[in-house]
Length: 192
Image (cartoon, rainbow, N blue to C red; front, side):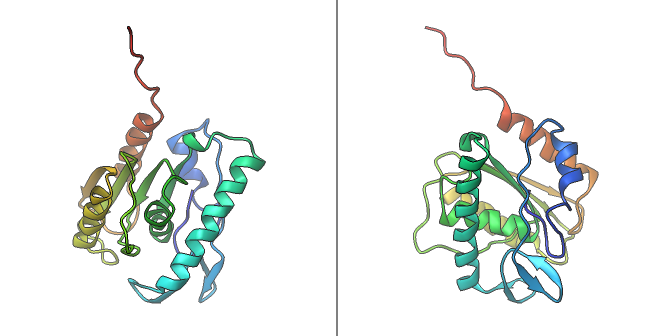
């Protein structure tokens, strides 16, 4: 669970419980402070990211996730990031800069975090992009650019747009729950 600006490691726990009450949760707090509010990376202005800091913080988070998989002995193949706003943006950064760390991600109200020099091969990684047509922070065209970037990286993207702003709605939560159920569904058995 990756919170938005001003959130903490506990902010998205009710969402996590709603999505999958039996899931083990890893929920770090962003290390950057902006006007007393935690974030995962610095920005220069609304929607303008400090790309150098974003890259550094993305690699720090990737290392944290890798260490957590060892420390807590969980299968990294079962890991899915659910990020909201700033948390969705760093999850997008993880997909684009550190392919393989996240097998999949639900990006809730995301924008393009950065465009890497070389697109990664995300080889069918499932990604939900949930955006709002009325979002004053992330224009819908920015979310569409992210969808294109992820698809150009061979991710299996499920786009969902709703008539909503930047906040999460019951529709967002229900859409994410269904997407997550598909992500967690066992692979079909092949009979010979």
